[in-house]
Image 1: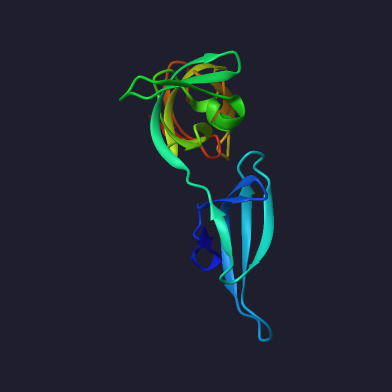
Image 2 (image 1 turned 90 degrees about the vertical axis):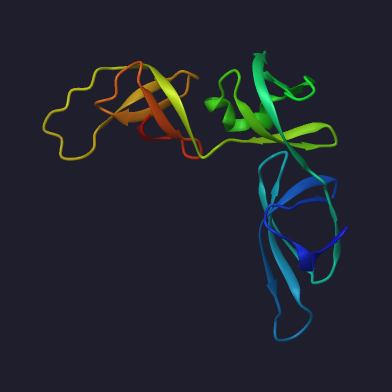
Length: 185
């Protein structure tokens, strides 16, 4: 149990049988009545953002979510097989738990994984990642006044927009949060 006065961003709570992560919170004392804590919570399973207000000092259940580093081995159907490099224990993560991070995963990558009661909830990627361009059309730089782009396919299969001078076989740095090109690697 944790008091609503002690909530922090990123904290995971167990409310109404659902895991919810605190995205934002605000302690509010109106001129009349008792203080309240207004929160924005993200449902871990669905990713849906909900707003909820608690009385200040109210106790809520805190879910203990552990973070560990696992290595991505391979895909098995839609699932992902991960391994603990210290114990060599393998676990299977469903595609829903991996989410959009799957667009940037290569075999052998180390991932920061969130686990609750033996179940993998999600993964955290670094803010940027270097990946190789496998396919892109030739770019013809002409009289372009703006930064023109063209579609390119990464080695993971994800398609992004890159500048015209990028060729197949080059490594580029990609922002994993937005999926945008940052620079050549």
